[in-house]
Image 1 (cartoon, rainbow, N blue to C red):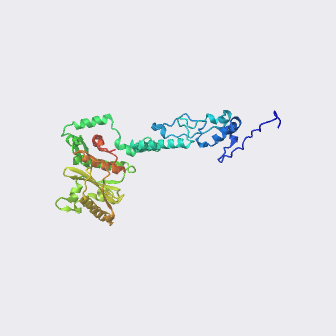
Image 2 (cartoon, one colour):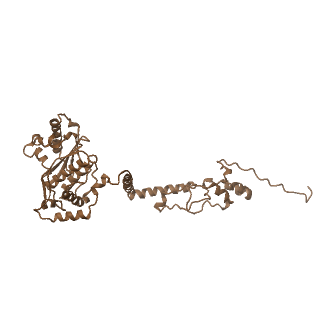
Image 3 (spheres, rainbow, N blue to C red):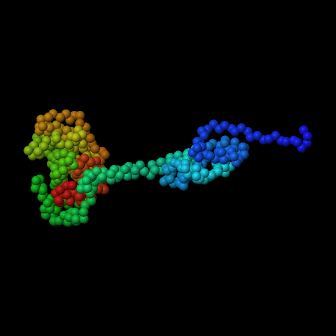
Length: 401
């Protein structure tokens, strides 16, 4: 070939490598940077860049929130990154693969890459462990209960108060002043008299409700009478119950002669009560054992005999006597044979306990109060000072609430 006529062969662009991966739909304006790259960059950079995993590329639209592993509030909040298609088409800019640094240390604000997802998942796990250590589950349960109580108020009339809140309703200043004056009254003065039960409450009798004092029979018996009158005023709000007085058990089970149904047979006549015991939901029997108050319950509704002791004591003989008495009573008054051998005998253990040596009587009457409402025993030792003043107020007004 003659000198000067030599021409180098024209460089031909190699065939485009086929990428075996899903291709985004270009008509939405997404990922149009691929065409830009083909026009503006060399084949070498293009092929080299295609080897990178497309999932490792950060999105061009990022949220303003950063995922901070140390921030408990942000660790659990993983925002879904949504792209506005119309806005993307208007503001679309050229993106160069050379400008994309996959190893950059910017804060993780998207979860498009596996590494970012792994970090967010680890952060969520750390947050869960921290919340468990801080007792978040218990706090959440209490908040849920509070929310349920607030929602229930929408379905209750304005003049009606939720039953579970009534036992803890605060006293007015006038009531507290009246109780304080009654505690300071002359010991011989008769403060109130309940005519139907013929019970007198003197200044000395009422003082058993002062802090640190043991409850006496007069206060306990009058309070149980007031609970029965409360049920009669609003039978739809309370369970149908019978409340024996503090002398019943000592008559039924004498320390010398033992079990004697005949000694209490006339206590529950239809003429005297107006109903049979078998028609009740629960029957309460207060028991005074020398210096300690306990409670026995004939739970007809749930077919079991229960024993409640604020010291969590157990007295099987008491429940045996209750089972025998109920069978004799139903046979005598209703002429029905009741097989109580299959009824459960329960020594209630999940109950509020006393932490001193003088509140056993208060625990006993509050067991009765809450059970007659159909409530769980949701009070503690800390409530006893308030319950003492509340009980004194109810006795002075001759009305239980």
